[in-house]
Length: 406
Image (cartoon, rainbow, N blue to C red; front, side, top):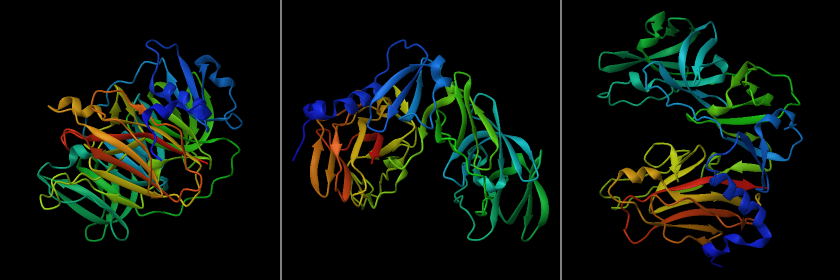
């Protein structure tokens, strides 16, 4: 069965469709408020002043985002700012503010301090310190820790053990050079071998995943959410306070809802518009446009989704575990900087059967909300992007906020 775009207004799932549309189209001048999205996709709006009165451990809301707040300023591009990978799958874009023993001190956007234990860290990469001419690959060691030290226009990997963080650098014991402190301005990256995390006491607090506008992602128990900000704890139990203006979206963790981008596809065919012999390939990107920038469509930035280039085919094994899918599609706004605007059709299939195909979509057009799609009993889900009337030129397509529901 093939569904047209006109079927997006099916009365049987009107609430979910209206909820998705509400998340895509914000008022011109909204009053400060919070949008609470339920598992079924329904959305309700609450004044920001009433946020502190919500009990999110019992509230049916599964996702939250904020409107009417001043957007954060651009993230400074400075060598001391790095991308820190976390063992729980999170990440932080932050600036180093020193450290002591096994604790690393960082500063997030909005000058929010945060401390991380070494057991929470998997990596740190300071892209501004990687020489442009360096042709190597930053990667973890097969065993133990590794630190990449900048020397002139190259990087030297130092294998061994990360001993401690200090105000002036990283204390590292190298297999060949012994123990010494490497100044922060010489550290281009480090990778930490996974440690056995310390046991934390069980908490009745709601566990949340917070996406920040700068691409950071944090997981942990929620302590308080109010108009004054979000207070939570890191995986190691350290307190953290975030300003609401820096938050793109909050997911309240449950087994009933999952972002599709969190699940690796069982099969992924990288787009090769000119054929494999030419060597120009466009692999899909998770939570980023296929060009490597943030997902952006209709003038709005999304922290969740999948960026691809046509022709594209991605398939997931569902094994009948999920009941519904919702989300939106668009050609990424990054094509607005190009001479062409792209032209694609999006296609959804379950178990090899086409369930929905979009009209031709181009860059600069607003995102289109998917019609309600049942996944009851489906074993596989395939997201496809086809070339349209301009072949593959500027076909940078986005699957936005694709959500699986039980």
